Amino acid sequence: MDYRSIITIEPGKRSGKPCIRNMRITVGDVLGYLASGMTIPQVLEDFDELTELDIRACLAYAADRERFTSIIPSAA
Image (cartoon, rainbow, N blue to C red; front, side, top):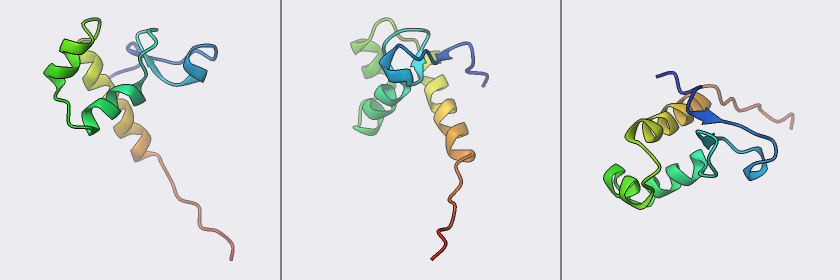
């Protein structure tokens, strides 16, 4: 999924955290709701400005970030 048109980052909004379509709802907010047990329909019911595509874009964005996360071993 190409989430680049959905996930936006603006330095002055929410401290530069990735947001959904220039809104103040962050990817982290959505992931937190899902992680707490909310279903996609429940999130959509609570935030009528979101779409299922927005939520899927958050998941794709998080998956990409995870895929490119590396652990640098410490020099002990």
